[in-house]
Each structure stands twice: as structure tokens, then as C-alpha cells.
Image (cartoon, rainbow, N blue to C red; front, side, top):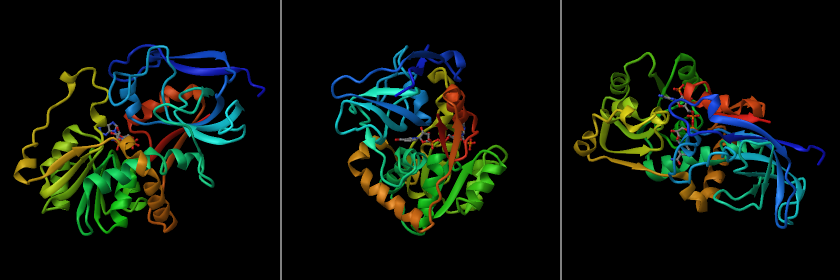
Length: 337
Ligand SMILES: NC(=O)c1ccc[n+]([C@@H]2O[C@H](COP(=O)([O-])OP(=O)(O)OC[C@H]3O[C@@H](n4cnc5c(N)ncnc54)[C@H](OP(=O)(O)O)[C@@H]3O)[C@@H](O)[C@H]2O)c1
């Protein structure tokens, strides 16, 4: 390994509201040498996920990133130095390597290091075959339990997770209605991802458009955004609908709970005898192989197309995370180092 400098983005302060450059600090350190059982990964690709905003803020389903700690992120890379026979030099791997050029690890932790599957590009390993595609798969099928002929409404439909949800819904014989921000995204959701319709929440009245497209109500809501968009969906539930609470990105930048609007239409769950349920994809880890196999099958049949939005340069990591909250990404947000 000839490189000696490891650039690392660490958390400089707890963010308040929208992410700022000053929330992060780029440090230059010496590339660490592996101790017994350890190995060093040269990071080649970083995954960007809205949940990273939460990891910077407070303890939740994972402990918060500490001030001064490297910013946590899923990543792919290659082993460049090793004292661990399971992870020899040259092996391509994925894990939670974080925003840095080189990661020293023993391969354990909440997100154990794993070899990249043969023939799968890092972009797809982190996207469609990573937690993104698996969130769509288990969230829709296990929590949403859609049946052929039902209507599935998906917010964040041009995003990494949402775009896959709608395509799975179509693959199993459902009608897929998306909600996304702007005409270009809605055109892509229908024209490329193959949804039946897409509502532009930036220029259309969402609740009214759902009612026009699904006069008898929607059977499954796959919610990525929350807030007003979730309220519009709740106002249009069919009897015994299933609302999959995958995420609520519209509130992730709120400086405090006071800035988050409450739901107005939650009693629709009672009237329609519906269910709203959250989940965390990591709970499905024992079944990930099942999800990867099913997704690979639909991709081979041409029923699912994966979309990746690849930025470049470690120096652009903070700006790349912000893209998710500015709605700049089409499909899975990645950054190549
Ligand atoms: N439960 C789990 O285990 C799990 C796992 C993975 C992801 N998630 C959740 O799934 C959701 C999607 O994640 P992803 O990785 O696929 O991200 P993504 O959808 O690829 O990117 C985020 C998108 O959210 C939209 N957005 C951002 N701010 C918004 C706002 N204020 N109002 C409305 N829309 C907004 C933007 O699309 P527009 O341009 O269309 O606004 C943006 O492109 C997130 O809520 C995430 O937390 C949950």
C-alpha cells in the first residue's frame, strides 16, 4: 500500500436543522496499520441514506455518531492490508466503512463486513441488492402484503427505495401510483420505472389527485416522506388498507419536534379498519438472501431497473448527503472515491 494519508470526515458538531458544512470536519491522518485479526479497506464507493441524518443527531435504533468520530455510512471497497485470513488483500468487500479513504476494521460490529457477491457491481451491491432494495422488498411484501389487483401508493417514488417499491408492485400485478417532486421526476417514474401514474406534489393537490386516480381508495401506502403527504394518503384509504411507515424524510431536518406538524387524518385508520406499521430493514438480515434472489430474478426478467446517481470525490460527501434533502437525486445516491 503506497498511500499514507487517510482523509476522514468526522462529525464536528450536532447538526441543527438543515445540514451545514460546519457540521463536519475533514481531517488528514496516517493510514492505520492492521493489528492482529484486523484489515484495512480502501473505500471506493459510499452509500447515502436519509437515515444518516438521524445517526448524526441522537441515539435511535443505532447509537448516534459521536463528535469527532468518522461519519457513519455504508460503503464498498477493497482490502489493501490484512492480518485476517477471512479478508485477504484484494478481496472486494462491503460494510459500514464511513466517510474516509481507508477503514481499519476487524470485520465485526452492527454491520459486519462481507465480500461483494460475484458479478455484482459496487453500485448495485449498495443499492438494489443492499439495504435500499431490501427495504423496498420486505417493507412492501412483508408489511404491506399487497395482493394482485390492489393499488399501491408510493411516496418518494423517484428515490432509491420508492422507485423499487413501485416496480415490485407492478411485477406482482398491482397498480402503482407514485408521488414525487417535479415534472422530470414524475415523467421518469412513469416512463422509465413503469408506474401507472405519478403525482407531482410540488404542483398538484395531492389528496385530490389520489382520489381521482383511486376513487375507491388505495390498498397499500408505502410511506417514505410523512407529514402532509402521509395525511393526503390517509384521506384516501380503502377498507383494511396497510400503511407501511418506511420513513418520514420531510421531518428529518426539523430542529425540534415543535417544527413537525401532527397528522390530521389519522382517524381514517379507524374508519377504514386499516393498519399503519413501521419496520427497520436490519431486522430482516436473516432473510436478506431471499430478498436478493427475488430482486435478481425480477432484474433478469427486465421487470425492475435499478437507477443510481453517482457523485464523485470524498471532499463532496457533505454536499452529497444534502442532495437527498434537496430532492436532487434520481434513484440511489452514491459517491465514488
Ligand atoms: N425503515 C427502514 O429500514 C428504512 C430503510 C431505508 C430507507 N428508509 C427510508 O426510506 C425513505 C427513502 O429513502 P431513500 O434512501 O430511498 O432516499 P431517496 O428516496 O432516494 O431520497 C430522498 C428523497 O426524498 C424526497 N424528499 C426530500 N425531502 C423531502 C421533503 N421535505 N418532502 C417531500 N419529499 C422530500 C426527495 O424526492 P423528491 O424530489 O421527490 O421530493 C429525495 O430525492 C426515507 O424516509 C428513509 O429514511 C427506511
